[in-house]
Image (tube, rainbow, N blue to C red; front, side, top):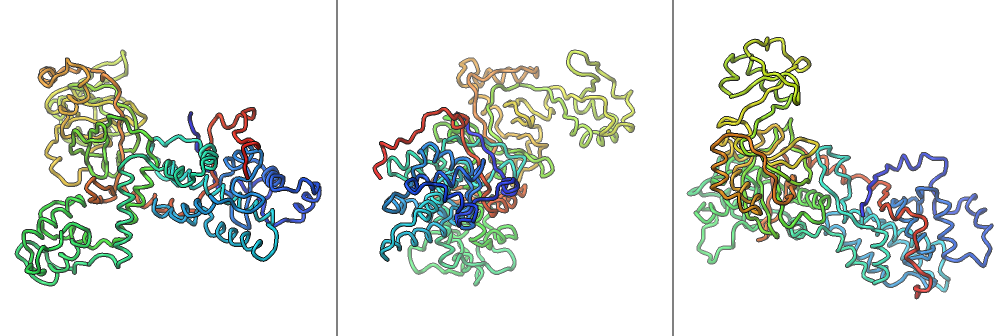
Length: 594
C-alpha cells in the first residue's frame, strides 16, 4: 500500500471562499447551531457539525490554534461515525494523560512538543477538569475542542516520527531517499482500541539501531549541556606530547568531559602534562571528528574541541530527522555510502562485512542522496564522457595539449547509437568548440588510465550516478575526499565485486582477475539486486556509544535546520484506499464502552 505525501502551505488552504472555522462561535455558527434540535445536541452531533462545515480540506482552528491534519482528521472521525476519540460524556478518558506525557517527551526524539498543541491541550484539560470540581457540568464544546486538538496532535506527531517533520525534497533537491509507509488513521484507531498510545507511537520510530543510538547520544549530550557544557581549550600554539601547562590541563578536562579520556586510576597523574595516555585520547577524539589522528592539537583539532555542546546537539537532532526519511527496511544485505564521511559499508544482517574509503562529488557537483538497487556491474568499462565534463573539464586540456587523446586513450565520435562515426581529433578545430557548440562525444577506452578504473557498479537512476574504481588512487589518502564529478569512486572495487557476485559460484577472485587482465568490457548481472543507500550523515553513534561528527561539506545541515524551525504545514497523509467512500468504517458504536 503506497502512501502519498502532500505538504500544503497554510496560505493555500486559507485562500478559498470558506473562512477557517474557529472554536469560538461566530454569529453565523450560532445561527447554524440553532437549527440543530436539542435532542441531537450531543458530542457526536457537535463534532460532526464542526467537521462537516469546515470545508474540504478541513479548515479548522481551536481558539486560534490551527488544525494541521486537514484530511486525515476528518477521515478519522468519519470512520468513527463522529464518536469522540478522547472524551466521553464524563470528560477526558484515562489514556489522554498517557498521550500528553508522550507529547511532553517529544524532545527525546529531537522534535518540539510545542508543535503538537501541548500548551493548548494542557490548558483545555485544566479547564474541563475544573468544571466538575466547581459543580458545573462538562461543556460539550470544550470537550469537542479538546478531542480535535488531541487527534490532530497524534496524527501530526505520528507523521513526524514516521516520515520526518519536513519534506526532504522541498529543502534539498538532491535528497531522494525513500520514506516509510504507514496508515496513520488506522494507527491511531488501533492505539485507542488497545489503550497503548505510547507503544503505538514508539512503533513509528525508525527501526534501525542507528536511530536509537543517536537518540541515546541526544540524551547524553543534553546532560552535558545541562551541567554547563565542556571545558574550552584556550587559544595558543599547537599542543603535543611532552608539553605542560594550563592549556594541557584544559585539554585533559575537555577530553574527559566527552568520554574520550578515562578517569585516572590514581591521583599521581599530573593534569598539566601531555603524556601518552592523553595523546591516545586525543587521537580517539580526532577519529570521531574525521580529523587527521596525529595526536597533536592544531588549528582544526582546536576548533573542534571548542565547538559548543549545543552545536553538537543540533547536529544530532538534524541527523535523527534524516533517519526518519529512510525506508523501513534498508535490506538484509545492502550498501551504505556516507557522503559526509567519505566511506562505504557493505552490511549483512546488521554487520559491516566490508568497509572502504570513497571519493564523492565536489561542492559544485554534489553527490545526491537517494536509495536504489544495484543490478549489474561492468568490468573494464568504457568511459562515455558526460557532456558537461567534456566541455568544462576536458576541453581546456584538449586545447592546450595536441597529444591529449593519445595520452588518455580517448576517441572522438559523431552521432549516437548504431549511427556514429569515429573522427580524427587532429582534424577538429577545438578552439571553435564551446558548451553550446560541441557536436561530438568523447569516449575513453578500457585500460590502466581509464577514469572509471577496472569496474563500475550500476544502480540505474535519474542522476546517472554509480560506484566505480579510479586511476587516481593517491587521493584516498586525503582526509576529506570531495574530488569527483558526482559519482562515487571506491577504494576496494575488486573486493566489492567479489561480494556482490558471491551468489554465482563462477565469479571467484581468480576469475575476476583473469577477466580484468584482458581489458575488454564485460557486463555481468548480479545474482540478486542489492539495495544501495547514498546518505549524508554529519552525526552518528557507534555500537560502543562513541559519537561521530563530520563537517557539513555541502551546507545541507543549515537548510535542514531552517526547515525544522518553521511551523508545521497543513498535511495530507493518507492512502489511496482510504479515499474510497464505500469502504466500511473501522469503528462500530457497539464497540464503544465509553
